[in-house]
Amino acid sequence: MRSKLRVTQSRCGLPFMTLFFLCMLGSCQTDSRPIPSAQAPSVPGRGVMVVMGFQAAIPRQQGPELVRNPITGASFMSWPVPETVVEWLTNQLFDMVATKKGGQFIPPGQARGVRETITGSDTGSSMRSVDIIKHVGKAFEADAVLVGQVYRWQERVGTDYGIEKPASVAFDLSLVRSGDGAVIWRGNYDKTQRSLFENLFDLNTYIKSGGRWLTARDLAVLGLQHLIAEMPGTSPPVHNQRKD
Image (cartoon, rainbow, N blue to C red; front, side):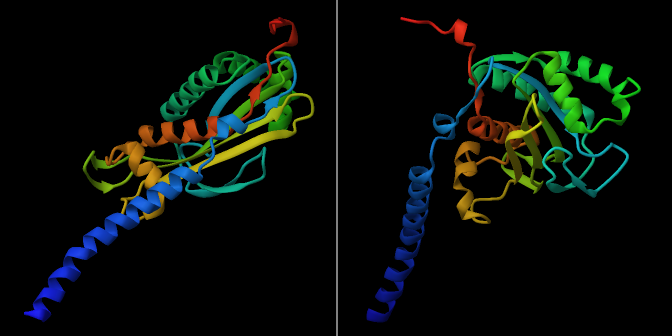
């Protein structure tokens, strides 16, 4: 009887200890995370930012292959990404930046028109990417230009609560100063959703997903929110600030 009693107590204690460990893990992750947007500095200047948006790292017909970012020099393994995805990501980026950051923002459509004019010229066709970005920024008298590349876009195969293959996305953002082409800030997001028990340290994604398997768009929105929170905003023009 004593032996059976000990076994029963041990089995009952195991779920309790697992639950206790998960709760402690969750509280540690939540309490130790700073709020990036509260710490992010501002880009000094007139308060104008051009949002050029995203482009696919490699053409639709190529890949997968190792690609070097022409702005930052970082290398990423890349796969072809549909143009519809690139356009959707760019629109999401502009909406979020315009809502969450202070300053004046030039939309991607206007930036694209100027870029195509530059690259379509005899001299522009051979220009480096950073020089093209500088010219676009100067055309709008902007302080900085926000550009990004998409390296991977894998759709979820399955449903909210049962999957054969999880969603997986990878992209980056770079904030380039118009005057000299210097990279003021950069950030990248590379995420493949895992179950909680596959990756206990990704509790934050599990909580935000509500325990569901996210689509690629859902996962990308989380990534954009994270990067924009870390990205510096633009300072508004001095003459527009209210003086008491």
